[in-house]
Length: 364
Image (cartoon, rainbow, N blue to C red):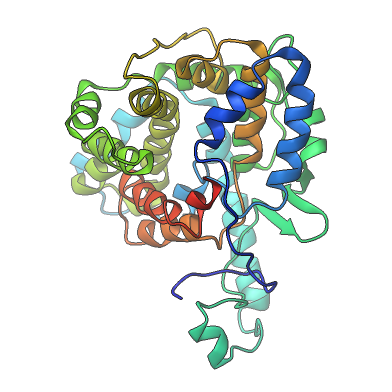
């Protein structure tokens, strides 16, 4: 109980799986001749998986009313806004900024035309059964069909493998491309993906405090617990939290949520590889290669340098980007974010839901 699940079909019981799935996959497929087989197996598996990680669109759950006036913003708040815009320009952020008025106008039109329409009947069993089957959210970034599998912004996985930009000499899509698609609704160009990759590299350095926090944990601490602790150690860097305390106007909240989200996404490969190497590889870390893309560098820092594993990681991260909005981790992240908790706090809340045995940990 207590979860939101838009699916009406019965939930399958979690089946036993290899405990260290990703590690086993990387080692098994650490050869160029098997990457196609690995890709095919992962696509079939993920078309029915209920445990996708949510790292991209959750912090942008609440649409900003772009028509509201920024009246009464303090000089301190204006200084914060100026400081944020003076950083290296983000091409993705500017595309989002340009799209916001149209998105907000569309949402207003939907409310005006259909706001009083009923979405259906709610029974006591539905409420007591964890809100299962209750239509209760607007969600556009992905749709899971029991027969067809998952679509992202209307595109199937095979279509995305063809349409999204790829690494030089590679066959699999770069996750930066689907991140762009999720946030804008548009297939990016190779140049746009390149700029996004470079931006993530600029944001990727992990402060010493994260290493200190992880080293203070017992060696047998579960990786998901370590991940939550590591992200909480980063939370003092939250631009959203600082901007909110400074009194910025609510029409600019999305800008600081975006900045935090980009920082988190950029740092996740390094954070996760530290946890992986500490837990399974004796703590010997592998330095980042800043010439690599986001997923390729993650594979490298885990200790897998074959092109086959880098390609596998690119596909793996692409097809895990979203899994509708009603699963535990996605819904929890949205819910906590609705209290104006910053993206670090919101994401950690979702990750703790993901760590449950009926959600992500079922993949072990």
